[in-house]
Length: 338
Ligand code: TDX
Image (cartoon, rainbow, N blue to C red; front, side, top):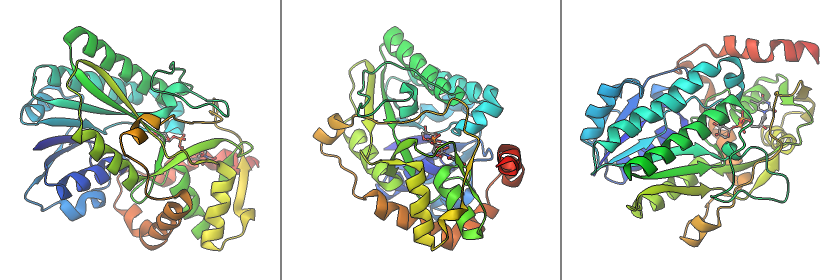
């Protein structure tokens, strides 16, 4: 079986590429190599006979059509994903996360033999007050330009499913963490800051809750989804959540404990505007189909922190983009003002 994976040099995409190669798939990885891409993420499969890398953009209609033509499955992990950056530069989110998805939909609708699986997010629902959980049919209420771009993409998926009778699977996942995640994200950033003995910039009161899933558990969920892809026309939404919801401050404290660094490094700074308080997915349907995460958060976090301690510095060197400049733009004034 042949898969076209988009964004395969990013965090989740690279774990998916490696998982599919291990499962016997022939994989084409289409990646634009933005700041979020790191060739090291796919180094172990780079020379594999069933792996092919194509540098390119999911907004390039002709390229996407050519690549989709040879694929049984298109898996979309190409996206701008960072909420803070969507406040700085919303336009690129609309382009990649919405226009890019339309390009994929256009390509796939011309290929009746090709299935499309699109990665979305729990953020499309906005903040979910405790003790609520968002089910697959919950209404969209995105708070950030990032979340709105993902919700908009889902609406385009819905429109194509209705208009052209396509069957599209949409994965809505909680916060994923693990090796290969870009340093801009909470757990890698706090881990690297703690290792360096530098202030860890906690937004607001730090009592916001996120639901955390280890990346390999996400790949296992995807495996199950791929074994049972529905062919009936429509949008098939799948919720993938661990059920482990943890306050940011607690996550920061756990990182300090794991690295034996003082909790005083945790530094409250000005909040992220529009910051959602809590995400929580109802994943009971996927659980009923036989999936459950294999790692508890405490275990996955320890493994992740150990990976960054060992590889973080060298791995970050091979990443695209200028992280120091972004860090200054995002945190310079916040840390100076505290
Ligand atoms: O410096 C920080 N300080 C801080 O307090 C950063 C980077 C984050 N945070 C907080 C904000 C969030 O409440 O930590 C939490 C997690 O932040 P992020 O890692 O930026 O993730 P989040 O905004 O929750 O979104 C993530 O999960 C859903 C991904 O980035 C999205 O792509 C995914 O859809």
